[in-house]
Amino acid sequence: LMSGMGWQVNESHYMGMGSVAAGHYMGNTPPMPRLGVPALKLHDAGNGFRASWMPDWNSSHMGLGTTTCWPSALSLASSWDEELVRRVAGAIAREFRAKGANLVLGPGVQVHRVARNGRNFEYMSGEDPYLGSRLAAAYVHGVQNEGLLACAKHWAFNEQETGRFVGSSEVDERTAWELYYPPFEAAVEAGVGSVMCSYNKVNGTYACENEALLRRDLKQRMGFRGFVVSDWWATHSTSVEHGLDQEMPGSGVGPGWLRHGPFFSPEELRFTEKPSERPWWSAAAHWIKWQVTRYQFGEHGFSGRFGANAPSAASAAASAERRAEVFRDPAR
Image (tube, rainbow, N blue to C red; front, top):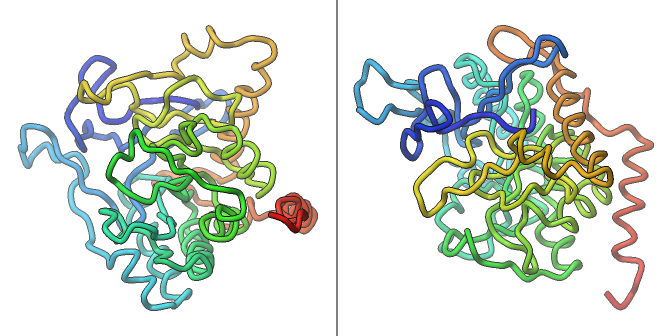
């Protein structure tokens, strides 16, 4: 549940950037029939199904074949049309399901801060957190109404590509909650099944081991009830106690400058299983299992429908109360 395999043939053979073994997706976890848990098949991305290739470029060994070229998320955002976004997200989800994937690694909902950010085209918020909030919820509904899980990314403050593996975003609470959190908060309120944490540091600590970011703001204040998965190579420690639930399947393989981990291997989890930490990683496995099994799994994906993860009125009220704590001090 907490790890798996991704861009690799096996534990020792790395296939190359963006390549996957035949029958595999960008991230894969095996099924566990004894627990009623289906295989989790995560695939890129929010702008459409990512076709992948084999390193020998032999067309007879194409990993996942063709794809549909959809308008970019930023293009959709320029329509200011929630219903259009919902319909496109639903169509993207149906293509994912037809090709065997059951988790869409999207939407990307970063609020634009750096105009030359190389990934602005795939972030549907533009420069407007309110627009991003409305469209993020529409996208999540569109995907999860088709019975797949969506993944809001990249949490958080991953606003540029330059230095994204080492840079630190220095952000105060008011700026975070008023400008950069709203699209993610809307995705959480829409019942998004998973959130992907980012490469960068936040106030000096890597996002995927940042307890203030993952456990306090996302899970406690926003009331997120899904699971947090790392981006590839974004994990730097066995940080379950800080709020990370799943290391992106396939971490620990790759080119030398990125190769580190995996940190969620059975050996690492056993090594760090101190009594004080055991409840955290047990809870992490529970949240992943709950998200995956709340749908009735079918041959080509989940056959559930949106709503099983929508917050109840009581939990929504509690979440609003927690968020309000941030702004009770007038001096903030």
